[in-house]
Image (tube, rainbow, N blue to C red; front, top):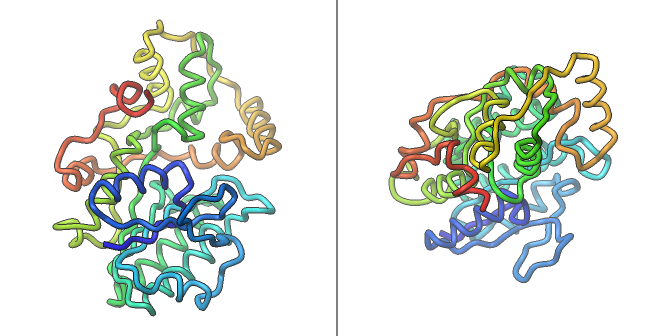
Length: 295
């Protein structure tokens, strides 16, 4: 297939590009152009809210993958535009241009979550699903749990915590259950959705690792894989948790902020059978994340 990959310069997008190319697809990346790359289609994921701007861009493609996403709501990259308004225009353009296959990289646990991150992601997902249900697209909403791999902001944070012999973790971090998925497994799943039996899938697909565990347990697992003794762990009181999140709010590039704290209020888990069925092999377990997804 000839594939338009939106968000090709991001953490997940870079892995998607490699997996799709390895699978034999012709990949054209679309990005903001902040770091110019040969062959990159320059788009504005904040301002390009008009279907008419996307229509000529998607024509001639067999599939579109949207891997654009931000955690923080900022003046330069507002969640409303990046997660909802622009993707809706993109999906509508695909329907008008006859681009049947559309894959949206979303996130697990966004339904019923009041955060702006979750609400804007969910709105775009629902729009794609409505177009699919009406027969205008063959859309897939892929919802991963925590995505782990080198180059990911949250992965760097987890690895930094795993190296520390002393930890004071907020209650939600200790309690939240996750099913970490290796970024390569996520990328290979998208490639599978664009060929063979994978083309039969539509609708919402969870993308999670083989087992669920507490986020604090995941950090402890990473520490064990690094060859360190168990860390001394303490519970961070609720007032200090809220204060630390507000400090993160003031740091534009910090993965820890009030939005992250709210997202951790519910578990991030799902059925583990979907991913292996797409991959044709077992998904990478969390016990091997450092060896296989970080080094």
